[in-house]
Image 1 (spheres, one colour):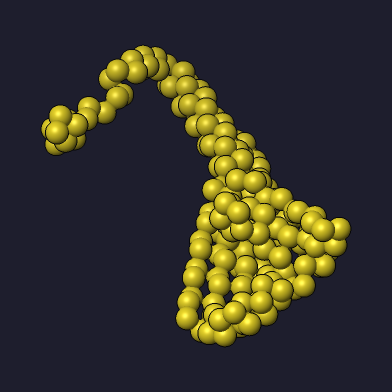
Image 2 (image 1 turned 180 degrees about the vertical axis):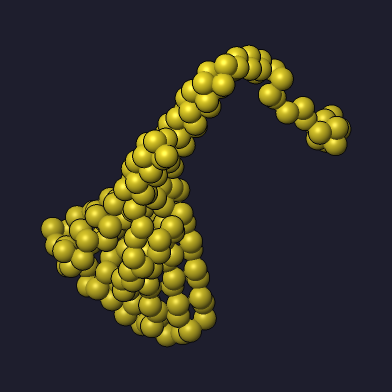
Length: 186
């Protein structure tokens, strides 16, 4: 009974660090691009672009009469997320989700509050569910394992037993499969 409290504390700390996020959807259709494309090629012109922020990944969906493109990216793989201010009035969101040179410019490009909201939400989700959150989760797991070792050592000493000697790292390594070795030679 006395050992449960630290385990619960570690679990609660883990829950605080790994936040759960609600699903959010943003209409990020660029009206400028939409109408310019409509003049050039009516079938692809009236397009819509939607950004869905789920609990674990961002989904960018582009839809027009000819194409339906869906890009999914876990928050850990987003890389940089930036807001860009161009021509004095236009605002856009740049990230790895939009491609190397692509940017999301919602509406007519003048909606700075929406761009800031998208950037802040993506940044928050990157920190809460991305690589940083995974590192924190691993740290919590290591602390939990160390706590379990301490409890086991206490139980063994109470019973008058010696803890087993740690095994060398070579004994813990897994040998490669013969098939993998053969493939390397090819």
